[in-house]
Image (cartoon, rainbow, N blue to C red; front, top):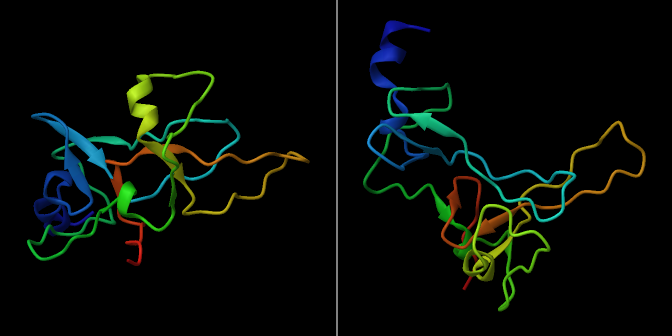
Length: 135
């Protein structure tokens, strides 16, 4: 890593990063991938303000790189939201405003007959791999 890269690239200054508290936030660079567990919630990776990666992109006042799930063409939501058997780490109100991120197709697996499930996200979540719904 070059000294210039270290000096100019911090998660806290990245267009894909959202602050959660004084020292940390979430990297919203990628949309969630399907997995093998039904109704699993997508959690974006937590990083520190000073962390960095090679996909860093400077924040810009005119660039709106993060697409809210509720505005995304890849997000599937019904008026009732999702009704999982296990609420996991969320309240039922969260699930009423949740849907499935369909951005990516499932990846091949070494298990025959492997079943894929798309992850649950809240309408207020966001990532940079979404696409605004056509109106």
